Image (cartoon, rainbow, N blue to C red):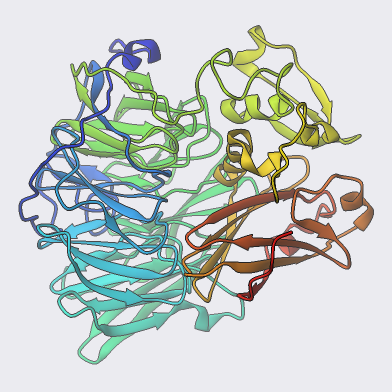
Length: 611
């Protein structure tokens, strides 16, 4: 087992790249080359496997760190022709020199809305989706928009490009074929026509080009589709429903099989289906939910789960060959390059393993990671939630900048300690990703695990969450719970752990609902984003699911009120994003499905006078 690199050592070896001039040359087609990573999962079938590439096999250090984005990176980057392309929650697509970390001239490019979609590079164009449901084609040389194509809801998967066609999916449940030059629709296939349920496609398509074009896609109804292109459009080759749960990820095609992951409550499943006819070959169950696609080689399927293990499964039998404990839940897809498996966990750890499960090295970054790694040209590229975009390289030694991370020591943290911060009992476990929520008697309990050496386990009544230690400023609409960095961390933690989400897009307003059911009582968080030119009054309305007294007994956050329904109201300024959350102790044990329903959203553009 090779020696690892500690967090302390790495903190001295990653740094901020100066923002300077760099020139992006033309980018080659999506057919992947050895030292590129042009799309999510490396190739058109998203295997995550590049046997001929160069990885980071030993002594990892920071090559560079890009910090100028304002929000989180939640999607894998694309690497092509010496440039790293990364979509960000701030609504921009960034192009950064892969060697220096310097921003390429003319970039970033605005995407019109936040993006959690991996970009794809092909034939001198980068294609990327956003949360408002738009696919954009942007020239890699000039950074100019070539065209935009609108779907009905968010686009979160990576497009696939082949032979003049862009294949994309949307959370509206449809698969789209788009002319790569003109941006016009060639055909659309609605996967929701086979069910009365409101299904989404949250991953991208996989495209196989042997003997014609076959497009594979999967939706949250548990349906997997194989679509065959014809001269007149597209026809269904086969469809198959998996027995357990919903599919939230991109299908992977390799070894004559289609590999999909599904989640049902706290359990995760990997299914292998025959790519020719959809017949189920095997099923593998993990001890935790799976929210990311697997990677596949000729021997193993590698999949990470929220049981904190990376699982290696035999491609023929579906039997577990080994598992590796990363210490925290895994929300990302592994990458396999030149005999090394790279995987990240939701803490901030990066691991390099042999294909037989032995650790080559591990290191800890500053920022929380939910994006999948990309490995190309001897570097590993990864975006974080709160400390920018990283490049790791063997033997690199650039100095770290802390960025906007909240994962600092408690003494230095603006969050304070449990004794000094009214949020301390909640924030510390949020940083450690180890807290459990509302317990019997309306108490929160902090389980600090590794932090236990520094802090006592603390119980705090739920009312403590809403106490203010200082007098609030005399400012209209001021709410300490929503204006502080602490609040942002808490809501962000709920969103990051949420296994379920729904999106409503209307009148240039996007409302995303996240349900975190990992606590003793579910918590629902909302992100409200406005692309309008005028202020707008937003109303979110949800039904009471069980005993209303359970809701009445807890303090509600600013903007929430309880009547016949649970309602939130806020005025959202142009370009503003508002976050809020509410506990749902009214949810019956068997009533989670009701909580997963899409909220009712009201939009009123009539401005009101502030008093």
